[in-house]
Length: 241
Image 1 (cartoon, rainbow, N blue to C red):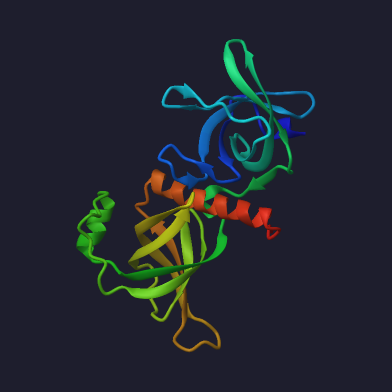
Image 2 (image 1 turned 90 degrees about the vertical axis):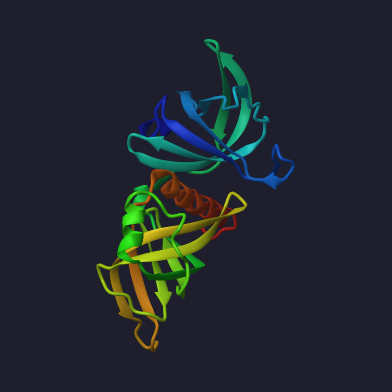
């Protein structure tokens, strides 16, 4: 029963499961933020119709969306199909039916997603560390960085492989790119080294586990969006865990 996990008023994100034409004329995956209006006895949901720049977004009947619920019990995801548009007590709503099971995700910061993402890193200077602590990163140099590969990522940190061992408890500078909603986003972050050790049977290759430092909420949310989007693609392609 979905009402055990999701309640009226819970915030949510709707993402189209196919590319659409965006306002700028390009194609991409559209994301809308709204909330749960009510839960019907038949398990269907009424969602507040999303808005963009003070205008209602008339989501098409029959359209399928990936929805992420932010509920009191955690984060839940499912695929839904819009079956009706209505007006209730002066509020425009869309009625959706579930077309997949509801999946609970671990806490956003710690849900680790396996991936292969090129990155670069080096130990950070005291001046750069001070800049990061104040949210000033514009003048930080990206020179002399060692190449590596991120093998899993979460909103809280990453695990990556490199040919350089880093000192544990040191702070490093990391740069990597992620494809988020069909758009490439570059990240330049500070991270604390939790572990760095040589990989068994692989000479001069090191596994490194790091925790992001001084990361703002918006940046963390972008990384989480990348994870959610990639997980949805995997489920759609039959690769879900």
